[in-house]
Image 1 (spheres, rainbow, N blue to C red):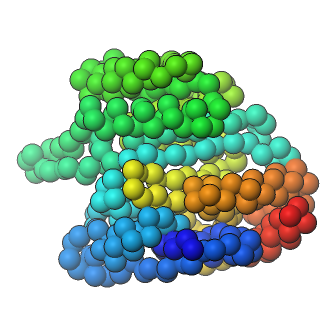
Image 2: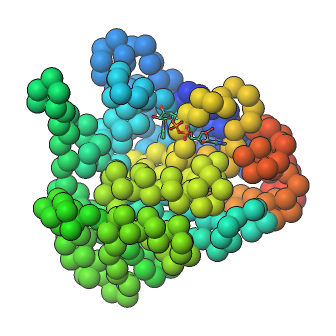
Length: 335
Ligand code: NAI
C-alpha cells in the first residue's frame, strides 16, 4: 500500500489535483490518499509559512502530490512552497519540458529537463532594509548543495539515457557565488563518464533557448535561474498548462506542476490539468508504476496529435473535467 499526501493548494489547485487524482485512481492501484489542508489563516496569524501538518504527513508518507499555493506579491507571508521544499530538503527541482506533436508549437522536437537547485540561492529569503531606502537580499550558494544537485543531474542523465548537461550561470559577474556553482558542478560532472558538458551565461542561454531549444537536453541551474528558465521553456511548448515538475530529496518527494494558482482562471473549470497529471505520472514512476506513467503519456500524445479534445489554453473548448474524462477514456482504450 502506498500512502500519498494530497495537497489541494488554492486557486486552480483543487481543480487540477482532483483531475490528476481521478486519472491515477482509474488504474486501481494500491494507493491510499491522505488529504491535508493548508491552514492559511493560522500560518498568516503566526507569521510562519511552514505548514506543520503538511510536513508531518509528508514525513510519514514520503511522497506527496501538491497543487499550487498563492504567495502575495511584495508583502505578506513568505512562500509556503519554498518553506515546504526547504523544510524537507527537497534539493532537486526536476522540470521536464517537451513539445507534443499535433499542437500548434513553433518547435515540435523540444525535449529537455531543467534541474534546479531548490533550497538555497535567493530563495532563502534572507532580506532586510539597510536604510529606509535600501533593501538587501542575501544569495547563498554552497559547495555541498551545488555538488549534490550536480550529482543528481548526472544520475538523472544516466537513468533517462540523456547525453548533455548545460550549466546555467552568471559567473562573469557573480564571480564568487556563480563561480562556485560553475566550478563545483563541473568538477562533479567530470567525475561521471560519458557526459557532454557545456556552460552558458544565463542571458545568452535565454536567447539561445528561444532560438534553438532543441539543442538542449538537461539544464542544470541555481535556484532563481532555474525557476525563470522553466517558465520560459514552458512558453516554448505552449505554456504552463503542459509543464510538470517534481521536488526530490534524499528522503521525500513532492510532485507539483510548474504553474502557480492562476487566480485569473480559478473556479471556472478551464484550467489545463495536463501539467499536474504529468506530475502525477512522474510520481507513479517514482513509486514503481512505470507502465502506468507511460500509458498516461501515450494517451496524452494521442489526444494532442488528434487535436479534437483540447483545453482552452491549447485552442480547444474542453473544460478541466471534460478533458480529464476524455484522457481517461483514451487510457482505458490503450490498456
Ligand atoms: P501562474 O502560473 O499561476 O499563472 C501564469 C499564467 O499562466 C496565467 O495567465 C494563468 O492563467 C496561466 N496558467 C497557469 N496554469 C495554467 C493551467 N494549468 N492551465 C491554463 N493556464 C494556466 O503564475 P502567477 O499568476 O504569476 O502566480 C499566481 C500565484 O501562484 C502567485 O501567488 C505565485 O506566487 C503562485 N505560484 C505558486 C507556485 C506553486 O505553488 N508551486 C508556482 C508558481 C507560482
